[in-house]
Amino acid sequence: MKYVTLGKSGLKVSQVGFGGIPIASVSFEEAERCIRTSLDLGINFIDTARAYKDSEEKIGRALKNLKSERENLVIATKAIPKSLPEVIHSLEESLRRLHTDYIDLLQMHNAADQAKLDRSLEILEGLLPLKEEGKIRHIGVSVHGVEWANRVIETDAFETIMIAMNFIVREPVDVILPVAREHNTGVIVMKPMAGGEITNPRLAFKFFLEMDDVAPIVGIKSPEEIREIMKIIEDGTPPTKEEKEEMDRIRRETGNVFCRRCGYCEPCPQGVDIVSINVFPSIIKRYPPLYMLQQGMDKSLKSYEKCIKCGECEEKCPYRLHIREMMEKSYRTYLEITGAR
Ligand code: SF4
Ligand code: SF4
Image (cartoon, rainbow, N blue to C red):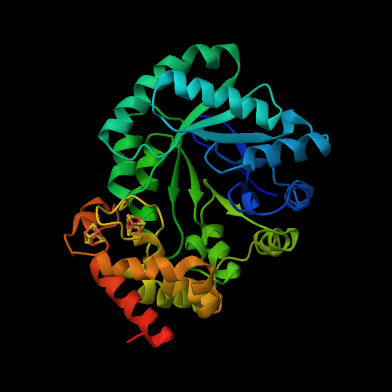
């Protein structure tokens, strides 16, 4: 296993980290199997958040059962930057749920705009005594949006930044990484498989083999998934010319209509379920459409009928997607599938 140093934090983490979102939808036993396999394969970096339902509890219980050496692990979690007391409360809860005395990396969750960034900076000052006490070792931030990420990095306040990056969303390679390197800010990557849009893990992870200073976080629901990904990572063969061409083809086909599922466009004042409508075309590539409609997507798709095309959602989208066009297309697909009109 190769290790990546996360910028000025100095944290040395495995080339791939364990992402805590998907285990929120599996049993405690299955979550433990996923974590055990990941640790056995050499992963030492676990990323979660208070907002990921019972992810912290599952991780905490698994690490306790597995009797893992705490000092060999890098545990990262996140707190929503509402106020200093709320972040301290969130931290205490995280410590309790994760069965640990300290968090290696506490990240301000989604410092999405100037107000949230300002609040995060104030909170960060207030957290310094907890850093001295040893309850937090390092402080980072997670954000969406390329230009905004650079403004956050340029504050020089955070030791790491978590951003979305993959071979579809590759702007961060050219725009964010140079700035992060200049400021020695560690880069953690969310959505390496574009939130499920990329279905080929070989291509998804080969993309990262050409970078030795970023740590993608991979969310898995079964030990088999992480075994498959680690084979690609351990093999270490960089992408071939043909594989790069394949990445380019997929990027061309999906890049400017690809919803990152960040949710910044919501809530819609008319109650339109924007994100579910946008992701419907990619979901039905992987799951039977009628099954997904029975699982509640039918109601979400029908909510499109309330859209008055005001464009407010597009102003809030950090990726400047043409949401109204995307939703219309998705809704047409829905009508074709259901034969509703
Ligand atoms: S265009 Fe306006 S009404 Fe339609 S989804 Fe966006 S915010 Fe809602
Ligand atoms: S449409 Fe834009 S803001 Fe909304 S979830 Fe997708 S990427 Fe995020």
